[in-house]
Image (cartoon, rainbow, N blue to C red; front, top):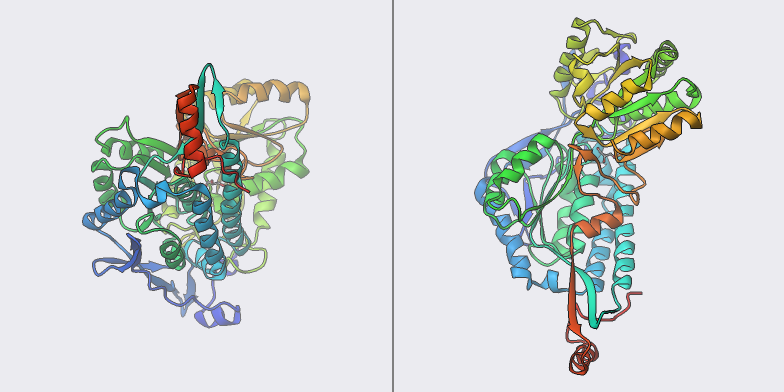
Length: 539
Ligand code: G3H
């Protein structure tokens, strides 16, 4: 790749690009107890992951500051969430479902108004290209709207009574209590909301700790959060995870932990809680999704899917294809086609039309990725595409690495970046051996059309992973589909409707069918003296 195709323009060209650096975000703000606070302690300067050549030097625009809160402030967020919960008697957890839905609708209207600012910051902070940044925002809005619909459906189904073996019961869902949510930097908006939103709409007060990168883009939403929900229902904090999260969990008041990130961190987090059995967890963790290219795969379909699957957002997706098993009869062809396709991928600034490859969000990632390639090549693999693995600052040209063998780290670890490790196989048993032995179990993509091969392979794979994709890349969406994983890849399922269930517990009011008790229930319903025990139908 010629250096010129990599972000290499001087600051004057930012304007001619039609794109000015966003105004510096006064990002040393955060939200606790219904109050947007300004942090007077340590802050982190947030630099763009995008870089520019200027007079032979590299410049990175400064985007703002993010607070580095301390343990005391983190505990204040917990205090605020506990006070909003008020032992389950708080305004929010006792509110009717329609009232909670109304608050969320108010929030989403305010959210839509800041779309442009948030999309811009997604590009500047983490380097996601414009169509994907817009998609992240729009998908999040859609997720919220779908969640509202799903809750209405759920509530309608639960608005009646069950009469069973002499008992009368109304079975609904109730919140658990203070919830800690932590999303990842690759979807700093969407995956913050896919746990925060179902948690609050079900009545749980939340502390949301923002990810390492992509903090400023949440700043434009703070006022909407403050104004849409009672104080303490949504608390947004920033800081170093290892300093502010342990005290929150050690206090023991968190009932639910929703975490999207590494399994190593998840293991550590659980140990902080004084009563680990009491802490309910919803986890979306590491993955090493494999693609299997069968002898009869159609390359016109397979190659574009492999490119999107391995290199969408430069491979920084938990669902990315992270190792390809290619039948030895097709391996040369796959490498040649992939190599051509990689070479044709436009690289550069994320808003330029058609750009797919951009600098990596984590400025240190390229060094680690390079070490994985170097280890593999020292053990007999080759980089098969011209310029593959070349690093300029935090940009890395995708590397197709072959043959990858079990001794290499690339065979086992989740690279989370633009490396395409390929292993050739002769017999499908080699693929199954890998899929069975690996600690990961999120998804697989199978490419081929022979039903006699596909049928049994699907049957074998469904007990190793939680989603088998046929002739398409691995992915989370549509968000109404269940998203989960086996083994070390997840705990719990997060579709729009599954999430509502994960963030609440089935709770019932039951009595025997005596006349006195029927009269009591009828009187409560007629007087509308309970928010829980009601037959109101949600239109
Ligand atoms: O990073 C993990 C995301 O949940 C993946 O979502 O498949 O829509 O990119 P995606």
